[in-house]
Length: 384
Image (cartoon, rainbow, N blue to C red; front, side, top):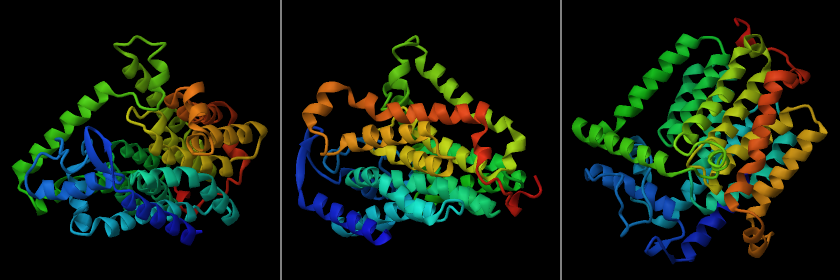
């Protein structure tokens, strides 16, 4: 399976290179524009340029990631675009595949089917040379490390994700399900400090603080202007316009935190796994910047949720409908005339992931269906 995924990522990379340029954002830009945003960020960092300004002579749109991520892209800065793109896309695919492969509680056959169900979203994210597969993979890897009692490695994966896209920091809630919480907090704090100051390898302190201030200004502007393909697109119609974002986010926070009140369930392996899937889906459904390629994160969570849950008609129906309308609907299998005529893209993409999120939350709150699976305690939880 991994060989097939690598082949797909290579073929997509070659296709994007061979397509040349296209007209968008008021100029001619490549079909692997996002990769150029990442790649060129390192040069801007070392040249003390504002990372968060437009560089339309190099790429379209804005760089929206941390100064640390720009430093991480040093490995790609001097590579030819074709080689760098192939490595970048292959790395994304590998991180997610490897993370899913390491989930011990899923049967190997189910993992294969899960990857196949994710294939449409994997292709979409790869076509856009995005970092979403890495983000999903890092969160799942953090869960895998926590299951093994490796808290320091788990915190490393969460912090790496947060310095790519800041909303990944919600993955740190997983630490509350496991013993050695103080150790996890100290490790998390240490990694945050380490990666925050890591760009000092190439720039001085005042320049680094300047970049973080610029990043903050950009994120604040993005929050004010965007609703994305998310739950925000629905709540803006039923809540006051001047406060619908804060009310929606408060609801999302409630959904994310209240399962953590079920302390006695922390010893159940499937509870911990299902909470990890809640985080993956939440990171997209309550993300005001969610785009179509972002949904590989939510679909990874939905796939793990389905195969880790006791099979039921409602779960099967919801999963099939999500696969059809969140993934397949956005492929060439469905004619563009049909997609554009019947329903707005931002509503159909997010609808069933939102339904599944609330279904998962309902099970946490009332049904306790996670207890119907094998709840054998792991030795890592003996001290709980």
